[in-house]
Image 1 (cartoon, helix red, strand yellow):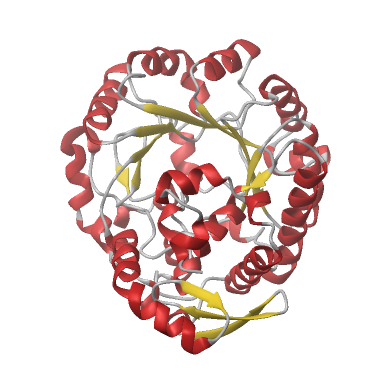
Image 2 (cartoon, rainbow, N blue to C red; image 1 turned 120 degrees about the horizontal axis):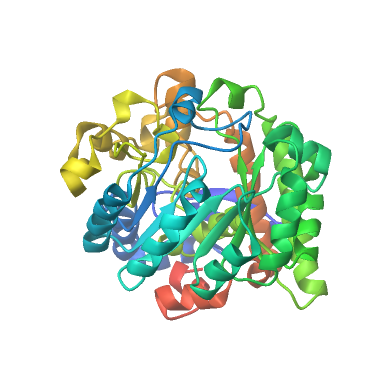
Length: 422
């Protein structure tokens, strides 16, 4: 086992299974021998099991915005192709037979909102639905529709400061989304997604306060992915980003303590799950192989399947047309290549005690920046810092200000400490 320190305690961790605890090393090692096989089997299935559950479906390549850090190539957006109703139905038929959920992603899916509403009604018994949107095309009646049907909504907003947000996402975006947040206030199916760049990096705690004041209970704060040149120009310095992200997490915990309304930073909650109950985690970026091409995949408006949306535009990772091949795209060489990418293939990561909590994301970003998925992430120091902070939050007893007990009980039927062997 490897030794780490958190919250003034000396902890021990077995990196391969993410078993950890504090106390006498010999006692922990004896206990670990009793649970080793079960934990290693669980970790192996988490990492290598191919169980597709989610399709990210782009009904259109078009967008009504031109964000400077967009993960999609400009030429992809400018071609403006949209799926016909028949093509959308074909994709949803395949999804209904093989998957649990569909997220309409983009570019901007609400450009097709009329047909999407009709199809969500048609397929609501077979599939759960989500929409990722910049919010600018939403009207109050659209929000009522989404809330009434319990559709998960990811709404983009990058800063609580209008001038900063609009410098990233276009003039008028902040005011429109602020209005949309009023319509969604208190809706548990809403998650506000903030992309962290060098322009907004210092404002993350302020962002948490703003969202909490608007009745938002859940947000994601994702580092900008360097899959496109414009995004790489906005990548923040890792240590500065870690400082700001940790401040945002602490502000969220403080607001949850001080009020009767919880706000959770989902990325951090997922790291906590990766420590306490690894296979209960929801986001599948913080593990290797990641979820791309085995738990989820993406389809563009021309029907082309990619292991993940971050790979869109990289033709070497195109797995063929889902409209022609259906779920056979999962067996294509590009999908297998992403599933074969393991953190052990990166020299620095192979000896890191946090390798199966972090996963060295993101393979698409690494390939775009370095021509290989097997190099250390630009954000390595950032991930190490926030993982260490997650251990500190656990040690000091604030776990339940970050996680909901219900999610872990559904997975394990007991408290996560018992599930993790802590």
